[in-house]
Image (cartoon, rainbow, N blue to C red):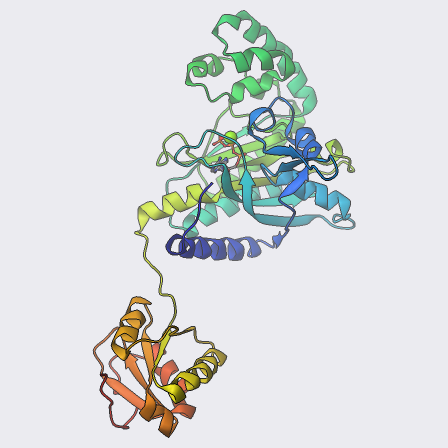
Length: 429
Ligand code: ATP
Ligand code: MG
């Protein structure tokens, strides 16, 4: 679990802002659910024989009332739980998004953390395939907005529960025939949830998985038509994709469309975004049958890709730094700083005293563009001096009433302009 320090947090805020306006541009509205949910919700939604439920959940018993609780490992289950609980789909489907921390007790490694962040979109009450395709277009647009050009789409369809049942028999037969090549997880899951074996991360299992019977070969007409429908839009809009018949995704609630966006720039942790259709989930956790589709993407992985393409820059702490010295000036500083903030400026007022020289050093280190200087002389005349900290332009002195205008002009106008005041300059000592 990581601390995100201020220099890095600036990039997080920038990314979050980009994400929110991107989601809003497709009509998605924000949904905020608690970080804790009853453990049973995730067991039922994600499925018992999955990596998450078997070994990745932070679960505990609330000592005060004996309730079994879990820190959310993902947010689709919570979103659907809330939609059912508040009857959110009454009358119309909903396009919703969430953004926040998730918790999984995995082996920590680069690109994989125990507290990580996801942004996710959920289209609830839509049967697709139009909305499935739209979710994929959204992702493609985001990669463009973030300047990431090597994230590739892998697509599959895992059909309906009935189709999976037919495939299951064949798969179990195949796995039994190769039982001595299976790892412990696979041996166990072969009987509880054989499809999960295909989701194994064990490299030794990959050749076996490669030649396992394909679910895609068991799809009926309706499932194939849905899959075709999604692909037709991708072709129309020109989004390249490849079909990966082995992809089943790590959660049990999916059906029909499943997809992952993958890059080879992050080593083994190359999946940036995963999603798909989950038409059975509402019923599974006690709601009315409701078709739905969505995706989740990992913010740490997005940021890692963004950081590769541009260096991390320490952001300025403020636009204006107010330095002040002398009893009257010290008191005036509060009013001056507040007045500047009234004009929408970000202002850091020096705290802790010290000489003008040491205060100016702090002003410089803050990254501010301008220093407002208040000495005894300024205070006595109800004036203020302004010094540009980033270009050599001398210093101007203005009446306090016109300070906000002067500061705004200096901040936002062409650097070549003449100094804005004829008042005599004051030297710093
Ligand atoms: P993986 O195959 O990498 O374990 P997953 O299938 O478990 O991924 P999902 O549950 O689909 O992942 O989550 C969607 C996205 O969230 C992933 O594609 C990834 O970008 C991100 N993610 C998942 N787990 C972690 C983690 N422990 N640390 C950082 N990001 C994660
Ligand atoms: Mg995982």
